Amino acid sequence: MSSTLNDVRAAIEGRIATEMVIAPAYSVSYQNVPFAPPNSTPWLQAFITFGDANYATLIAPGTGFNRHNGVLAVNIFTPNGQGAGANYTIGERIKDLFDRAKFSGIIFDAPSGPNPITPASPEQYFQTQLTATFQAYLD
Image (tube, rainbow, N blue to C red):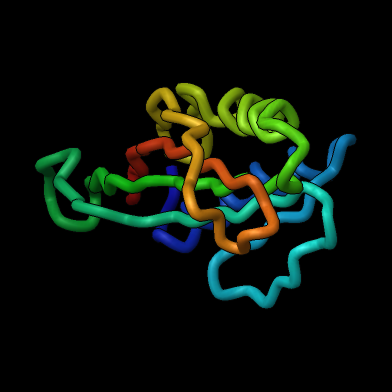
């Protein structure tokens, strides 16, 4: 179980970082961290958005835990003009990483996507986005 939203963020980003150093390795951009996209090679961008929270247990204050909903969005960028295959292969890798995954008090649902984003930003890439909703249990 996680203690804070920052613990949840760190666990999710850590899972992505650990996977993306395995060959073939890809650079990953995280929220509010300086990043320069590589030239003409695939890369990823990860965003975590937190939503509603609810009581998961109704016991004495300080002894229960809450369920906090969230969404992980991963943008996948591959060079334009080379087809969608490489992009979707990276998307499958991310999808497999989070499909119904359970770790650190976080439970993921089945991911959606990757879905093409038009126009891509930056425009010199083919961009898709994969999303996965999750519930984090915070003590």
